[in-house]
Image (cartoon, rainbow, N blue to C red; front, side):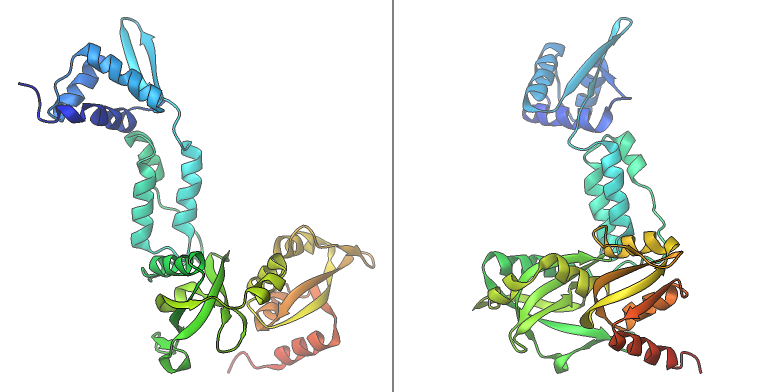
Length: 326
């Protein structure tokens, strides 16, 4: 009597070859037949030869080689190289906005793209200093709702919160819903931001996606397309996200020569470094001047100084006069 899973033979054969073989692990025909038997499938060599050919024709590369009197079979090329999957795993594990639970789920899905042997190489813990995993599982549904709004050309509503001194979520606008037209998602500093037209304030604004709650699409067409189209997207991203808001300004920085690497890392390769007196250069950058930007300059311990305009220099002086200790 034939096995009860006989109709699934080809599927189980694909599973066996993909999970148990790779470039360094292979199975002989008797071993393949034995593995099929574990799934209650009886098979003859001839039929399995034909099935392996069918898998190869379908796109699951099946390779074979001879070693003495034995022939070995294994899977060849896959959609992802192991090195590529390691990069993806590292990115997932070090990302702030992906929770611990979702991290394990995503890595588990990636492991299905390699053999059981290679999956052990992916299941490793990456330690990255200063990375805190987001506790909010709902962020994935939030992103789905935002994409739905953009796809259907509709507005969305949501509640937006800040953390209070008790470490609790505290909704802004007294808990009332924000109503906005979503135009783009931006990923910066390992966080997602929504670029949207705020219906109440009638301007483009950005919102931390992980701080949005109760997001849903509403039956209103999007607004603000003209405002969004007017923006230089690359410059908008750099100004608003790289330095966390504030007023827009072109700032001249005077830097010691060994700060060139820091400036280019922060503002990109397109900035123009102009030689100044010996050992220094100047650079003009478009930023959103904020306490975060000024604190970034302070952290460089005098190697980078604000040369202009005067308004920004005055803001720096005011910040330095503030008391940071009791």
